[in-house]
Amino acid sequence: MEKKKYLNNQRKLTLKSTYRGLFNEIVLNFRNAVLDDCEFDAQCLLEFCTGKSRTFLILHSSDIVDEKTAIYLKELCKRRINGEPLQYILGEWEFMGLSFYVGKGVLIPRQETELLVETATERIKGMKSPVIFDLCAGTGCIGLTIANLFSDSTVYLLEKSDDAFLYLSRNKDKLDIKNAFLVKADIYEGFDSFSLPEPNIILSNPPYISAGEIPGLQKELKYEPYMALCGGEDGLDFYRCLIQKWIPHIKKGGFAAFECGENQAEYICNFASNIVQYCEIKKDLNRMNRVVCFHFQS
Ligand SMILES: C[S@@+](CC[C@H](N)C(=O)[O-])C[C@H]1O[C@@H](n2cnc3c(N)ncnc32)[C@H](O)[C@@H]1O
Image 1 (cartoon, rainbow, N blue to C red):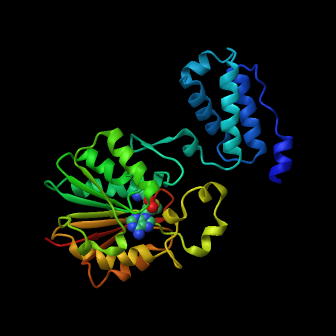
Image 2 (cartoon, rainbow, N blue to C red; image 1 turned 120 degrees about the vertical axis):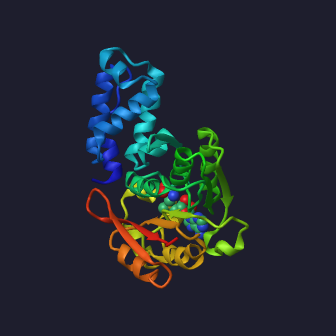
């Protein structure tokens, strides 16, 4: 349905509604707008605007919502209907039990990225005071989570975008992580351009969508920065850079793990075959190749 026509058809949120009534109206509007996860989004926005817990809202479902809150909620619902991601509207999103600031200019942490962190965690467990790089750090969901889990590690997070770097700094401060160091940097300059210690581990979730695929992405994804999504013509530019300019500097016994897109893992392993002794591919819950790991002998 055309956006304008849909907006005209949209039911207006009545100002004197109960919590239950308001919830039902939002869900209906979201369904009309053909959003995914209508109930979930409506619940999150209701909790966010009222500042009440889910349990409170259930127990007080017939209470009247004050007018100011109802107007605010209506504004936020409009933004969601226009395609703005729920996470940007809420301003914070959870990743592996930690809450990260998110908003325009930074990629929203994805659930599939937890596989990269879990893979890294298994390897880090046996290491003493490792030096870890998170390249293309965005919100810092990978590197800050790891730094928080392993207080004897030293984690360097590199990010080029001004906007993303701002979120990265805010997240480090909010989570109060002392063993993480932020570097505003273009990873294409390579390890040799920086005065960083040689790493034991390199982790990265770089941009990996091919330029040709970007125009066809769903509306919500187009709200996220192009720079966080586009990995060049074939989507693989960043992996070539990581393999040529970064992983040769990993210390003996170390490893690297990169998140990748569907059908990219084998290319990445082959591309690294001259440099790396052992490559492993991990599948996500949908049985897609999602993480490529490189192991270096001691
Ligand atoms: C796919 S996002 C991943 C963000 C975060 N690691 C995560 O998993 O949510 C890629 C990130 O790389 C950053 N980036 C793009 N080009 C870069 C470059 N040349 N050097 C450093 N960072 C870059 C983008 O700004 C974006 O934050």
